[in-house]
Image 1 (cartoon, rainbow, N blue to C red):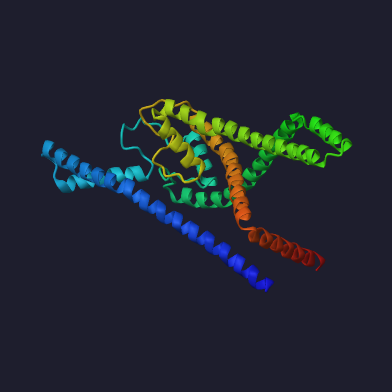
Image 2: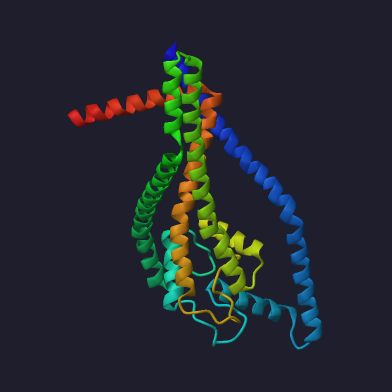
Length: 320
């Protein structure tokens, strides 16, 4: 009977995750379609109108010639060449831009606005990614451990500030007067105070990281690139979540004179911000798991049994 309950809990948990995942995808698809389809149609009609106006103003060109020129522009854009400006535009493959590109490869962001165009570059990119992605994951894991240690020290330091000794003395006093109810209340107050301070430490860690990685950088990007803060924040989040659409990329405007290390500094920001965001997302996953366990205690029992089975298998394997 217990085996049947374990299987049922496991199936229910898997089915719940599958249902939630695909429901979330369906909701996203419907909302994106509602928000973007009309704008896409308007942009397409506007582009066709602009082509007609261009042909009307420049009668020396015909439709096929214009379409061929459009194909040339699209080909240049796919190869990472900005069609606006002239041949004096900054190179996409100087050291700073190459460093930024290498960072997007190993972090799997892949904006899509720039890629190797030579066969040798493409082959090197494949092997570079094969070695670089595991190395980057190991680096981010170690960096996340360091951040976790600092978070633990912050929690310990803040908990030490709580005047729990006063409450413990109050508890001793309650024992002296044989008032067990007051003693239990005092102990509960100590635990609640410590939990509140730990939550405050996590909040401070989240707020500080948000300022350093999600608030100040978008402000700088908005100032340098001429974006709004919303566009800068959108770029930062899409980048750090490794989605990387490529609609907003720093250091690509040919009309701006960037400092030589601008994109390299952006690449370093991406690396450290990814570690912080990964830690925050892991906290969010743990919170969701705790909520599920609180509402469905059977999941916790099932997970503990799975861990016991896994540990016993490891012991048997080590003995062998």
